Image 1 (cartoon, rainbow, N blue to C red):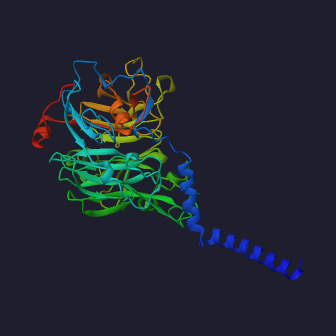
Image 2 (cartoon, rainbow, N blue to C red):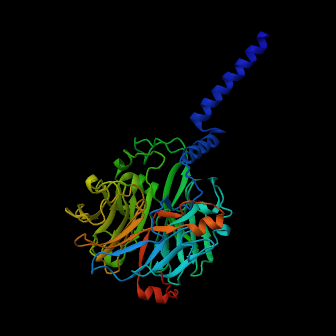
Length: 462
């Protein structure tokens, strides 16, 4: 071999290695391509089988063909309930695409449902990697609108990112507006129709939090989360960057011990401060927002305009979801991993922003109903219109139950299961087992006045 040629090749290799080092250090091309591919690879390593609809926990020949409902106490509420669904759920009612959601009475009779052409709605979602077929998208948080429609945060199974967007449909399932803007988790809708939705965007170049010595521990695609605020017609009014708000806060230690450097906040819930709630908590005003930051095990009240932190309670719950105000200004929280393991591991806790203290509401000592209870990730709480009761939803166990807030006593329960025979028939799949245990994302109170004013439909008997 010609020595000059060998030296030339060696020089090229050294140059390539040097450029690779510089690209990693200074984020030169093709660093970002590599970072995006790496993050997508890690996300897609957790690919789920997608032969089944996204909210199926497992096929089970012993699962009931319809949800099982039990009244546990005469004190159970009588309100109607909005139940979140997804593609190919309740096809006995919504035979083509399944029901995205439905309203039931307390006996389980379906009073109204929303079927959406998911093949059309989810056909062309931009900037996604993974398995983007329409049946891999589902609603997480939903809210009933005064005209009988729904606002839905959409998430993806087997996609990167999983945060997809925000959609409003009318009472007949027609799309009114949509934003593919990486909205996710649970949303809030104010009395005037204003929508508050968590969003995520990926940023690079942030090495430290808030000008402190606390390192981000994320080389690329750090999840910069915030809250998008939209008018009822879908127009974006403003965005509140929570990462900026944390940077500017007086709580530099919040981000020191995060589990995932690239997902430092994990905003998963929003509630709205009303004038009545503001009167109960000094320093808080109507329009401020109650939020849950899972990775920080933190519940906070922030300014509704700029995101400034006003009240912070941290460490009183672990990986929590869904803080919801009670009439006295305290908040119920689904504490996913801070409960006693002997009772399942999850609990409902009540936080007091005036004292910083917490009290377990459910389960109480000696309680056996609805135990064990554990939902490792996700889950939702909905407080009744009069504030005396709450519905607790566990995603993985696929069940919901109503409790009395004062005593913690379970009053009513809903176990989610379906016969998926219509789905298998529509897809031409031969399945020896068609019954399935299902996940749950949310159950919401609907008063008679809301139902009637929205012009929702007549009852369908089970």
